[in-house]
Image (cartoon, rainbow over all chains, first blue to last red; front, side):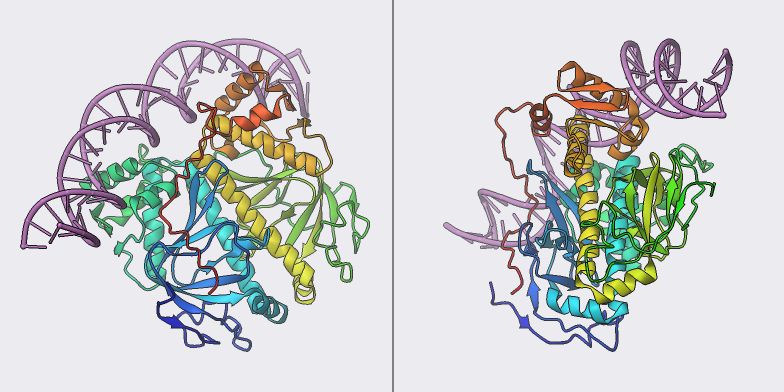
Length: 255
Length: 255
DNA sequence: CGTTCTATTGACATCATTCAACGCCGGTGG
DNA sequence: CCACCGGCGTTGAATGATGTCAATAGAACG
């Protein structure tokens, strides 16, 4: 399985992601990255329990990460696209807790922990970038949590499609027509629902003229209506019931 | 509201948390912390949208953090106990995304961002500690996700009680008898279920002789049985169905 | 000592899962 | 080239776990 095209460089200064990539945020001290090889669908980059020895940046393709409970249940925690940072779950225990698995042919840049740490010590921008990425990952997870525990399945799916669309737009691709790199099973797992429900909802949305589904290809016909399902659909007038948890909002910041 | 006892020091070298606290992980360069004041129940430390200017360490008491969706739904993302790091959600955008709210009389140590960054630049241990904490927070969130999307309400509640018990044990308190500092509403929100369900489950567990509930006080009578409900209860023989997501487990780590 | 917050309990409604059958597509081997 | 097979996706019917609504009561708070 090492027969793949293997491409090892010391610096990725002409990577397409050059501006957003943690290796390049500090122009004065580019982090050397190694081991840029090609992975294929269903290959894994690392598995839960493996020694944490590097972070990775996804260069091309797409991937998913998942955790496993003691009972054997798996939960997909995220999908990744080019530019995303992989492996930050490893800092906690020194072992990866995620299993990272590619959804299609993909490539990554590897940043060894030693290199990373010296970059952190030397560059404010690298520190900023890493902390920001990790904070972002956390918030992302919490948004997912919010959607799973507070939204109907239809809203979750709509939200998911809009998120994907946004991600593609940000990467300069079409937010109107795109391909899902993950299976229905993956989506269902990620959103905490049954694949049958996904199927039914997709066809219903199609019947309503909101989207067009052809296998893995999705076309958004009416983004406004899609976005609208996120609000309480029964109630045309968007009622902002704050539903607030008891918390005095003094928010006496600092001192 | 500034009438509270106000206690400002430069260094917290004799804090009870001295060993685990990020301010003290590097004995050679203790981070100066400021503004140790007393907060009360329902006070908030910061709110979503406020400028991110500091991290905090919870010194005493307990707290919860929550995020709010555009529709006004709130989701509690975590409960905090002494030693926990607060505010790491702020790195992403430079504003807090959480609202942090105390559940009882509490105190914190404040670590300004400037101080933090110089400590990060100078100390490997501080870098390690911060990254570890953030990674841990991420994993924690994902465990919650897993439990919400893959477990029954009974299992979620059992899991929650066991987690709390563990936390108290780790802090040298009793894991058998403890007080919930949060309301049923908070628990329900956190676990993604209705308060009525919490109520019913608690009384059922009590009827089964697994726990004793008296308002906020919980006593674990039979921890083994509680732990056992986490597995598929129908099936006495624990069946480890791996339920694996399609992912070749080559896990060709590094290269 | 009333008002409000918190918690409990019952009856009922419902959304989503589960079970089951089937169709489609791509790959593989004869 | 065709037939078979397995993975993926769709659809229908029945079930059930959990939420919603409603009534009540105790504790906390001012």
